[in-house]
Length: 149
Image (tube, rainbow, N blue to C red; front, side, top):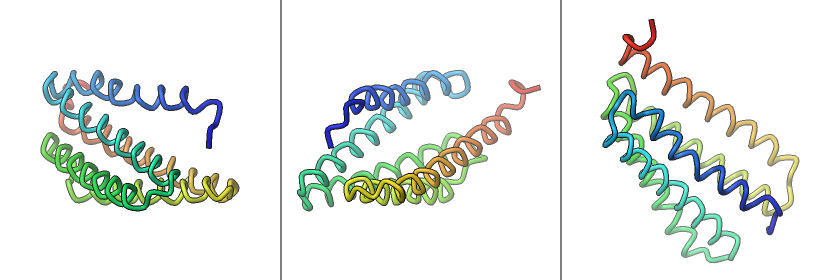
């Protein structure tokens, strides 16, 4: 699927880890923020590997990339659970695993040309991402109330 906006979309997506790093520096310092940025960069890279393997029909490489992607999601969940007492590692694992399952479902819809179902799945993805954003924001507010008076 050589969509004309693929590179622009990828470039914007790859900006997200840096945006998170900058946002988290205020609360957690440079080292913690940089570690999260690396985990998120790895996550996006693994997702790309997974997508490319699926598109190429390489089931072995896709299975390996998917396994690594879920391991990375668990690392992110553990990392977040360790830096903020208001965030549950298990809740993050569940949300991130649900997110990955929806992304995989959406990829299947797109690659099969089932764009109508893809739109519905994307709505579920968006809802989940917004829920994660709310949980992240509320956890930061609870941990650092002095910044939010």
